[in-house]
Image (cartoon, rainbow, N blue to C red; front, side, top):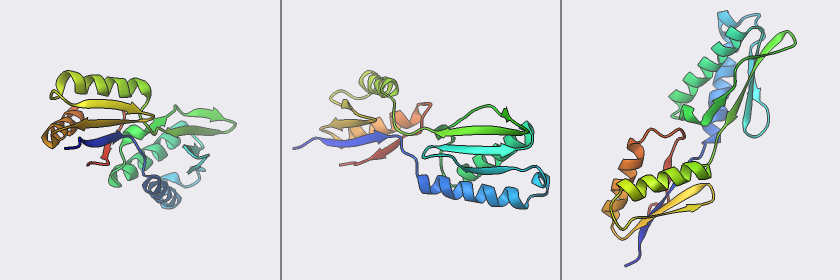
Length: 163
């Protein structure tokens, strides 16, 4: 019998992020506390979002609104790498980078966790920015999924290609 396997990945649902960004832009356009602050949020490249406002606290407030919209759309806040508000002329800006994929150090940590705490006979292979976990028994794979979910990792994980 062939081994059963699944992949541990860290992907962003870009459509959901784009929807949250659009909702945030509409909300700051209509909210009274953002009137006259020049607050805006927009894409600035493929994996970067730029928040602009007249003051640091207004820019931080836009970030809070955006994070709230992401949570409502089931997007983990671990994908955001938000910088501190920085002055830019008369405005204050915050750059947010979206993190996607599992870095090799993080993949090694998860692989070691699976080897040390997982059931015997489970193999974990690093394949680029994802991790393939395989075993003869499907129950062992279920245990691994529960083990990885119980850990407080600094990146969001999804489980794909379960066979």
